[in-house]
Length: 285
Image 1: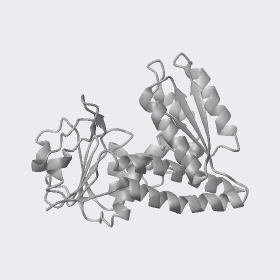
Image 2: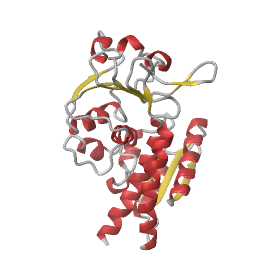
Image 3: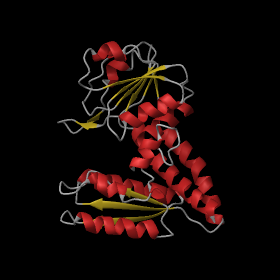
Image 4: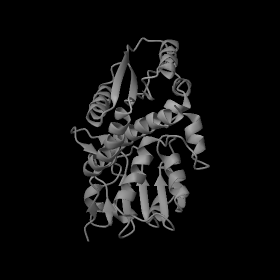
């Protein structure tokens, strides 16, 4: 058996086309969705991500601004800019590119974003509201995973889902979103004893640990859906996920590649959240 590879690029194009239509409808009403991205410092990976987000905005009909601060910028300066953007009528979503320099408290910066413009879904309100299923904007990566499962026709209700990773950005919200859809949830970490015993019981296995190729074929249930959220650069410069793709593809039923799997969907859901934020604003007019 060889797994069906879930093409994140193809799914992203499909979802973006649907939401581009919604953006065009807003533009016809005189409202263009707007996203402001804040980047502090010159982290090469962050710069690439920001450029790709700006390009994706342009292709989807979203107005975007990049607010670039030097590494030496103070936290107060950045928070002041966020407060200005909170009041800016043309901006419907604000994103702070992580990681921030060491002298920043990321939590304080993110909490400065008003909930209605927190399109990355990192504000404590949005993360906490996942418990009740009433978040305004779901965090983009787990939101993208849920959309991948939906578009691939993979049933969630009644299935056993195992999430390996407990971060506030992926692991915890991922578990809550799967739970909301009726899955039975097990949350593990890279330090869980007898990890393979848990992962082998998973109908849906989501891995987000930042440990290259830690999930091997012997840790996967035959026919399982395996979602690899990790992205790691190896010494030879190649990118790999947290799942050993070559061995697991012979065991799983569905499998996401790295790159070209979850990554494109993360950016796509940021666009969706931004357009949804503009729709909410227009609905209040």
